[in-house]
Image (cartoon, rainbow, N blue to C red):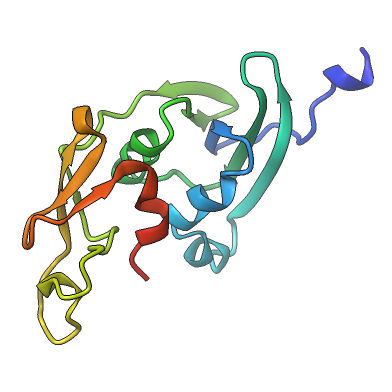
Length: 159
């Protein structure tokens, strides 16, 4: 076996593999799945591969979450932002391909780009919500009708 054909990272017994992430976009995916909270889990490891050769895409990023399954809502958001992504759940060394349904709405993860929107006011107990207008390439705030391009969502992930 040539050096190119060897695995860059060993296989995992259970967890999640997020593959075919566009080149140099893994950091945005990590932000979406709130990786900082995962790092505090004692059994969870996060493996990030950037700019890995890919026959189909030229270069890609890959994230392996050892001993952690991502939420379906996070998988759906990742697939909305990056349609090329594939998500695999690994159980007992076996790969189960997961195809998330694209969301009709986004709840809580994205902040409104309109600074005066009620959903951005800290004193208001309002949960951030957006309608997904997939065909138009936008999400729309439930409260102020502000539009946000789907490609811009990573810049508006709620803290």
